[in-house]
Image 1: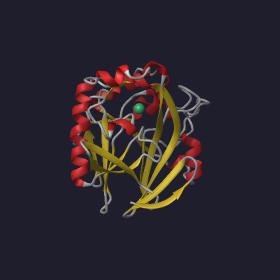
Image 2: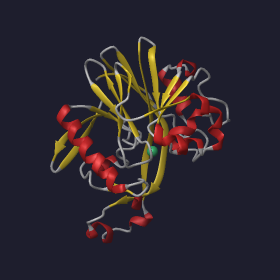
Image 3: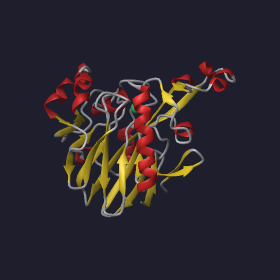
Length: 267
Ligand SMILES: [Zn+2]
């Protein structure tokens, strides 16, 4: 991955014929106790974790080659949540990306900070030429439980892990965090880059200690197993990782360090 440009909310890099953008929708502060230390009593007793907040980045990603084959991975929170989110449009403008060029959105799962940006905070459609929303089959029910998004029902294109979306793009099931939680593996000829959704929520802790779980995971133990397996494979195969909550820019590689890993951001 070769660095291209950076602004306050947009980071661009290139790999082979592809341009890849990390676009910030903003951030969300959540209780630090959501990060769980299951077998480590000392960590719990030594700090008043219930008083602490941990700040999670909310990143979306977009890739294309020669202005074709454009896919947007997740679309942020729109106006559905805290005003610290919903800034994807601003990030795209900084990157010089016209929102009308987005025709395909691929969702990693159906949580609010990943799907509600289909609508702008003023309720207008964010992507007027959108014609397909790729989503894990098991995430469809949760998506349709959001009444504001009912107008997108006919655009949903359900998939399962292992489905090939194009010669360069493969879906990868990452079970545990949410129903139908899906990664997308982009192969550029130079790099394999996995858009890994919510594999990790607190990069400062969970790369070094992948065993730490997140209370909002639907199945914390399954999510932990997915995280361990996927990080091990990404380190072995030198697969790039790009994630919503991996900080800024939230795209890079991992290396083994100690008993866990360290994340080396691109750029
Ligand atoms: Zn998330």
